[in-house]
Image (cartoon, rainbow, N blue to C red; front, side, top):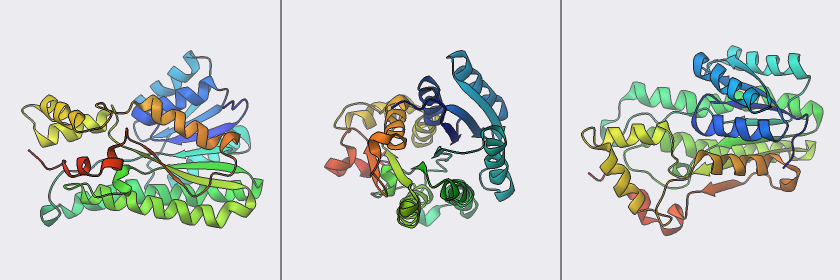
Length: 266
């Protein structure tokens, strides 16, 4: 799990899972290019990596725009000449609402970030890795990419599609020495969960959190650092023949099935 001198690009790096993974890679010796549309938070995340002794630079980009995606890829190549690992992580939750009432504009926005953003990342990073004949990519999917989550139709659709892209890319790139996998977090202690809790009960989001945790076999949310550990493993030589897989990190949430139906329960 050492990444001395390896060049790692992370999207959605300003907060949550992305920031935790950046810090983990930085501690492991990687040279980081952090990407986010929130410039202030992204610069702060890069600063945290540097304060911890790592090497990081920040590039502001909207992952839904091809030119800006190519911009962060170019920035990594200009600075380091290669990309060894790519954590294709940027994503948003959208709104919680029944499918029959889901706002079309919100649906388009979620699909744009969560699916098109992942596609564009693959589209521009894969050619670099194919030329190198090496590289590891981890896409952030979700347990919502494996099972239904009522009230989150756009998010569920986008994350199912991310798993499809992951498998397709893995099959296409394997002979070139490039691996593409997905990490599938369950509920994680991040801003996204705070947003979902507040949407479900604006008057008492803490009650939603308590109820939701009680329904999880582990009795708690996953930490961003636990997701980061899995991402580093999937990018490491320890996972040398792990390709086209989806790694679930959810404290047995999907294993028992029933807990995933609780999103719209009030």
